[in-house]
Length: 497
Image 1 (cartoon, rainbow, N blue to C red):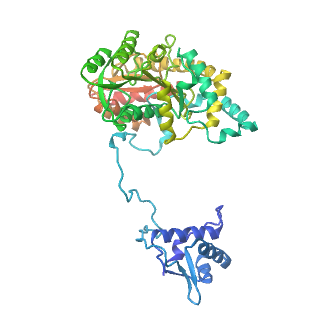
Image 2: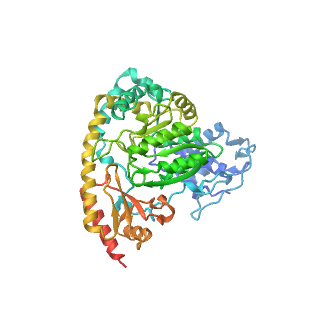
């Protein structure tokens, strides 16, 4: 006889009725194979005694199970698990006697993509004590949450906005697309209409859609060495072949790109022109013009990922390549994750209309559409000037944090690191002197409750080439920056061999 007393656990404080809890657990044991077809169940009186509940509770549970077809009553014999159910091999019980539902491995085959596995921190416990240095994220604590909430609330109060809860366009919210036309034309110098815009759930979706449309049959993509690894993986996953060219203080080497184009068929070139990821350098004006000329001549796409255009500290931002694209070669990708907060998963893909139409068709089978209410909220905030005001506010804060971080890094740690003060962005490209190893630094720092960019290995193979990582400053306030430098100083002094 199945040990119901030991394996049926009913919670009288739960929101779900006791008879339904009993139903759920009996169904679970039938599905797992522990209660096989034709197994006899205790009578309602005996089951009630074993479980310490009223008999009416058991009767109600049995009635429900009969209605659902899990059990059946045979006159003069009793109640049984339905005999016509398929036989399932019994699942294992844990040491406590309850059904073990913690299977970590699937019972079917699937494709594993080992190249998508990142190295994260050594342990996850006690993370609340950690100070984390990321690779360049905004400070979500500065997000204009009051403006977002107010705008969102005003939209939901108006009855005619209920249509936003229905299916919308795969291209994105129409008001947001129109708002972005004005916003991008004014701030980025673009020359676009709403037909050139597809709203995405962040920049990464834009990169994914572009790669799926461009890279088939091992088409070649040129990227910088080093480059944003997530993009490399996205291109490879789509079927692309990666070709790397050097990056120096003037950005990606366009002469090297031209040399490759002469001998190989290039489908696309990926650039983060404003602040190259990871080294933060800006693509020079000469190379920008050269790259556009090459794109026209060799008919490849330029995927311009302008992930932090709005954060340039030394002068006005340099207009993107897309602002000078008159031949339909540039796919411009941006978003509001860096401007507002990582959770604001709204981005945009800007390209010629035929490409946007195809991207919208592809998007339909992936995600269908974005959050129309949130997109409408952002549209209202752009038109009202809330986004630009927030941008101006945090730009000053991030510049101050950059200056403090760089000043303390130079004052306290110049014997161990070299770096160049970035003109913009949210991170510093920091190179460790070659006699030290990042493995040792990261491990020692973690013991000081300091997490240094958990994905630091991704910039090249074990950082043997340049020994550099990105250290984000924007998400740290002044006191946190001081603590980071203090802890890092202790770490380096302990490693000064």
